[in-house]
Length: 419
Ligand SMILES: Cc1ncc(COP(=O)(O)O)c(C=O)c1O
View 1 (cartoon, rainbow, N blue to C red):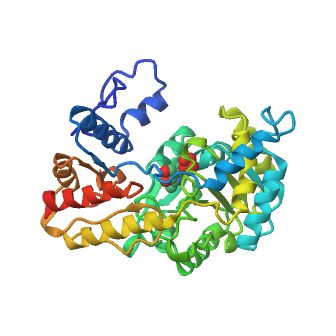
View 2: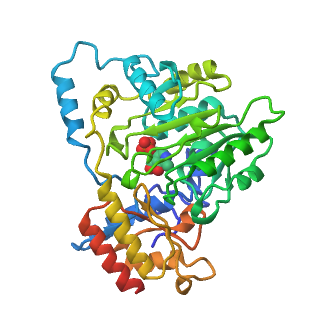
């Protein structure tokens, strides 16, 4: 199995390799990256497939396995067959006004927040939104506090603007620990970055946890020239099982920026459509709105994809405008039951499509044991990401955005490798 940082990604670069034509910023972050674990595991799956015509049970990448709902396809066809001139040209950088207005009203109703059109900026997925926001708000040396473990791309988004990610410990079952966040806050803290339902852990922060965080932040803001901003990254919020609830900081903290996308809940990861919404009570709201439109332009996107913007109001207004989350729920619950049977420890899955089980005692070693277990699973043609990739040795991350045959195969492989 290729080691992280070995340059096995075909880039010709690895730890200690000459940086060639790269900027020092990219060389420092790209070549020493932990994030490469996920990519490498995904590529290992491709190599296994190419080497032998046998199934590979690839649980590495969080790539939605469900197709977009039929209402999306119909809406695209409908839009293309009856459209006025000029629908594919440049537009206002922040996006089509009628789409932003629709989203402002929809989110406003959902959270009881009086968003206006200008608070919404259309983005190239959630990743585009986070990068635009980072560009607009963060200076070199600024700090972003994030509950750990976290989506590893955050490190790269921060590095792009010279900001630093500061991990904060989480509580039982990866719940939000407001006091740990308080302890991680320093004079350079600009954001607290939340992701609920969480990748990789699947945790959903509840009302009490968010209330406690809001209280901590209000305390921390005392005497600051500008308040700390909560950035709520929520691409999994509509993948909650059994109609469960995902509370938001929008309703309890004035300086919140909400970021989401339809990569997961509509299965449109490749179409790159998302948006961000500024809390109307936000300090510096007007200048930030302008800066977001500007940053959308200068980062190379210019605007979010036009057709995908236009299709959103039609799809989101339709009750069928969502993938069937019951499929992900079934996969996660089946796999969770198997993992528990083998002695792994994990909470009951509630949302999204990731599992983040802790290894049973018998499989742990002085390095956590996750890399060794990952290797045993590779031998059974089953690909997971070791918790080490997320700075959490002793855990595995499994993406259950896969078809049923892959779940069956992976369960059998876990039995053979670890049973
Ligand atoms: C927590 C989190 N944030 C952001 C993203 C990026 O989403 P998008 O594909 O919409 O850019 C992902 C994708 O996996 C994610 O898991």
